[in-house]
Image (cartoon, rainbow, N blue to C red; front, top):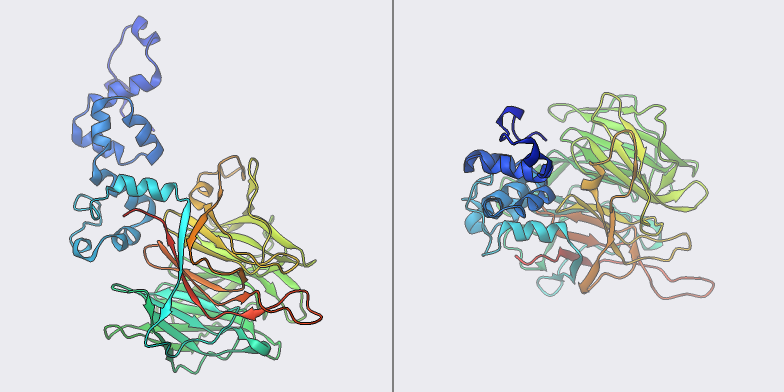
Length: 477
């Protein structure tokens, strides 16, 4: 980055220039600027560059310590929604979304908060209690969908004991003032029909549900829109309707992966077809302006592209990029490859990421992959090829994916970190549901298949879980 035009650099003699390093020359140039334009330059820098520059002289150190500057970097890199959600309610209303002051949170500087998020190394988990001595709650299940919508958890469907599908919709409020005592409410929507192994993504302000498997083993390819009604305080209603998508639509499937791309598009990949084959196709659903209809179109002949699989994850990391991880392949092998889908150009494409200096998490299927605070993807659980379920947490530094050169997907940058866990860690599980709240600091995990009592002629026990866990990023706020 050129911080000043060449004619504004201080003139030096040939002898002095030979003894002055480029970094010293840059520092001398910057320190000749008044505070306001200098701060404007500092606001453009990546955090590591800002810290390196601040070590060169007292004035830059003073300017780089400004809390308003670090609030700006926090909002720039990780979004206003996350920053505002981390503020207490008393100051969030007075906080400027531009990050210009008013931003200390209970005495903790934004610089310190930025550093903690960047260097995240641990989580705290707890099993949430039900209010009123128990009350109504979703029955234990797996292969469900769990979404965070405007302060509410929204749970739909799944499979339960005996291979039966479920068609119920449950909600629980976890917004402002949530005291870690949970109250589930069942919505009487009646539709969509029961299923498990479906996907449900929040696209704009609506839920978009696709596919799945019913208890007859039939794969589905219907597309549903769930419109959210929040007109009354602490009340939510979801109106489901079948979306008109015309005659071109993906083949029926279950155990596929999906995520939103921007506010009007959903992507799906892979899954298990009607004949039991694992699929490798990629489809995009573009929604109309009023969400009255949609159009599916297949990404044809992408090369390279992820091989066939099911039980994998897709996670959106910005409006044009999503990350695919893991799953079970056509030969029933369990995978741990990493792919980036890039729709920023006129021709969307897949790119496989090769890490040269580190090992990724062990292969897994039926895990969850949730975008959290700090442009990180939190990987949790899943099972291996022997159906050994896992309880480990990993983060993928998605921000580092954005720094890769377009012509090379090989990297020596550190991408993965295994996190330590405190508190009531969830049991080993697979095919659970997971989602993050608005701040990205809290992740909620529900259900899944967990280890149970081993019965005769069974190598491993199995049971469905019905507990809800809160996973918190360990930050000293």
